[in-house]
Image (cartoon, rainbow, N blue to C red):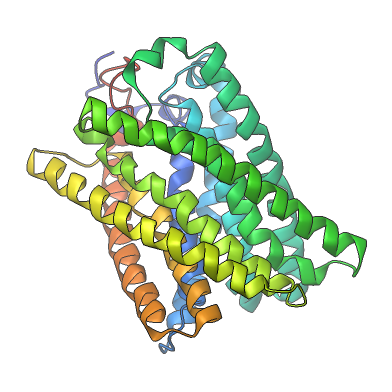
Length: 371
């Protein structure tokens, strides 16, 4: 389908026809800027206020996208069903779960400064419950669709996007412990904490199955298409988020023997591999950029995954007391902020021009579906 000449003049209902679930990545990428910045092991005047403003922006973006996606399903069911059956688009439903849980966690981390502690707990609980339900659903449903209905994509090899559905429960595992102190002592607290342990294992084991496929695809099939190259950063998501989860488990259950030691023994090696992958993925992106890689919505992969590495480094710095890890968190946060500014500004420009909501030029599943 050819790109429309004047997308800005399209009717409002038609403008959301091609609004896919990948747009929730903008919410995730925005929320992590506020969440990670608020817990940095560094005192900067005005930083918490700035993080609170970013959280408010992420909440507004979430509500806007939920309304727009509801309109998409109501007015364009054929396209919505096509997205579910498209192997390039369906995995992005994991972004909905992560967006809900991330904004909910931000409400408890910084949003309480604006709406108060009680309201923050209520909002976080609602968003966490909804996001976790979606996460567990997509963790089963999307792999099922990939096996049963996405068979035409088998010859193209694994994509880092495949990680999105299975990593979403890890976000719930990492942010669930924030709610533990606000639950009644005893069974309620223990149930949530053990549920987080279960989601940690679910996501970690699924990632360990998927990740060799992704690396094997790169080694045997060569570089990804230019527009898909930023998705290599998605591999950082389960690495940084699992490191964060291990730290939050230790924080939520300080009485558990060796909780902090387990977080360190798990997190330090995983963070080492995350830094190795960051260097590899960054080199591939620079290569793609030199070969003409332009902006696409895949650039949002530079935000949330890097943000999870920030929170992972923060947790390790808290449990080890190492200054090197504190500065690593600060350095990664600087990278995150720059990436967010670039992705956000280019997205706004694409929205104003109408290009990002226009019909994709190449509807083939093998192309870089980035809109």
